[in-house]
Image (cartoon, rainbow, N blue to C red; front, side, top):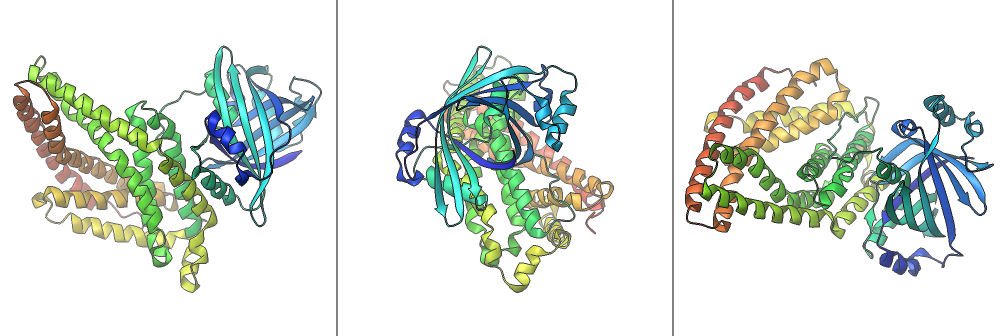
Length: 510
């Protein structure tokens, strides 16, 4: 049997799952719990998984079922995938069952003559029921408790799996949002297969950088807007777990970049929204990004300003005390960022945006020319946005040599908007024409960001001085302040050269 699976997973603690099981929101109590045991197979080098395919044999109700999943999309935790299931004679893969389907042919071709071996095992106890949160919408809700085994490694499972049976896919985000308002649940962007492969060592966790290039020439403005937002949300979710657990500081940086890109994407299409109806969503995104800002400021200050000072003045007792104070303040800021990402507010943001993007309420509120603007090819809108942003950039940069730090900040915001919009819309134009301007905008955004970091440093230096101990802390403050001032002057000189480069680059959208 071949189906298109549409599902969204939430994770929760055992106590939360127990409370949720008795909630009338899930409808009638379920029948008897079902024990499921699934074994996932792959080549010894995980060839199937690297090609986006999972193959499992699952024991359910006294029989074996072979399942293959692959392809599809992910949108803020909502997975759409092709699934092929067949009764199997035993706990060993039978590829002959799937040879007639394109996904099956791909699996056979990828596996080739390589042996298929068990990689990990998933054991869960599942209770299932069906709910109808809105007319025409039916969702199968499964509460899973269990464990994943990969060799000697184990990982517990506590999931709420929402699978769409009828109705629009955005109802999954809407229903999950209702659950998140009442319970401590989290969006789980990883499938059980993904978690199993991670446990088996096939996936190395690490910060995920942004990938743009999602807009296509045949897209309407509405399709392009949603594609940009989904890509940014996926980038955010890819870094969410690492950032919320306090791993590599780059996780927080990438989460903040995702939020800033998301807000910029909303801004690039803001004039199409009737009555500024995207304002509340953009405000929530901005607030979450702002909650991560102090952590990023301390990370940059410690690594790019203070670290070279410490190398230049080894053994300075005042600087050592200053560095220890910075470490304490940096840790506190990062813990604040972790709490923001681990909060219910973050889950409501992701699920709320998912439901909003899926429902598209701005289309229902648009009429006549407003509605037509959303449905027209995105290229004309892109040209208008890039022109407007480019003119604003030039205006903000007038009299560059005399700009105060406050006006340089405004220039940075204008540069960031143009850089992000140019990155979003670049696939609509030839790469040969767009690359020189994109490279120059990257350089401009980088140097303006460095200037902004230097402008923020005095406040951090004051905080660290107040928190430091010892008689030499004022001397340390003076050393770091002079170093930062020298960095600022160097960046301003660099800015002059890059600004001339911007003027010399062709506007590729023209």
